[in-house]
Amino acid sequence: MSSWFNRKEKGIVTPTDQKKETPDGLWYKCPECKTVATMVEHRRLLSTCGNCGYHDRIEAAEYFSFLFDGGRFEELDADMHSADPLHFVDTKAYPQRLVATEKSTGLRDAVRTAHGQLNGLGLVVAAMDFKFIGGSMGSVVGEKIARAIDYAREHRLPFLMISRSGGARMMEAGFSLMQMAKTSARLALLSEAGLPYISLLTDPTTGGVTASFAMLGDFNIAEPGALIGFAGPRVIKETIGKDLPKGFQSAEFVLEHGFLDFIVDRKDLKGRLHALLSMLQAGKGAETESATAG
Image (tube, rainbow, N blue to C red; front, top):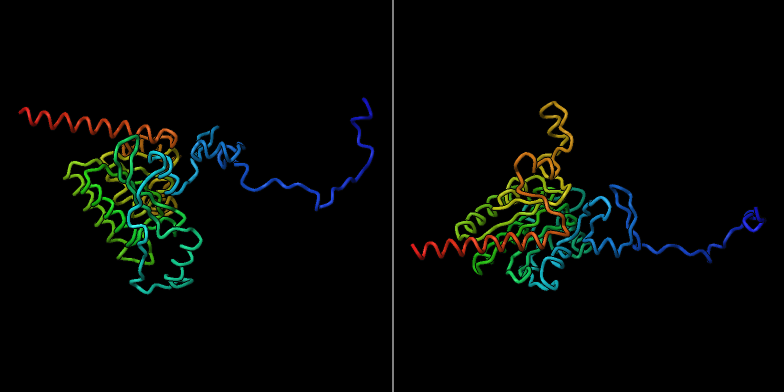
């Protein structure tokens, strides 16, 4: 073998100031299958893995950007803040926690609501953000969802709820639990008005959110692999004293047991929603014509 392939000098060390580091944020490694892709490609696939289909968590702003035509929308109640009705203190006072979370996330609370066009169809969307205190449901979350439903009723628009939550917000105790009844009552009014409600459950959707608005859709749909449940697996296992089935509380398990209508890949979400809403709109039109003819 030619000596050209053999290193003659030992211990070659490049000075630190001459080393070229790989810039952060250029590559994505899938936590499920370990496939590496560029961040550009990962974003093009809407933060899903091109190899195994794993769905990363994304923020409300990202859902708005690809669901609404041209990323154009009008946000509702953007400046609403939580109060501190119980003067709650754990490791820090609740108001301090809110201020710190707002500063670190750039969000006002755990849900954003907006309206715009989806392939030309008007739509109101409420999307939760897990990074704001675990997507917990407090008074602001309940009130913003209720107001978004009211907007949908007033303007005769369908409503899409994108849930991602650890459940009720403990810092607001009973005030948080009241949001379950408030949002459920508003959804009943939406149904009475004959307007469609689609609930999209993403990873994770748990606690009081699952026990209220997340499972009340005319269509309950989910992203692949999403954790969906009420209590956590450990609590359930300790309660029933038995091992839990494989895949327990995954979207696929919940679909198999009849609690979901279908699972949709995020890349197909806009198209599936448009097809569903168009079908419902056509059905409503046919029903109206039939009633008129009768």
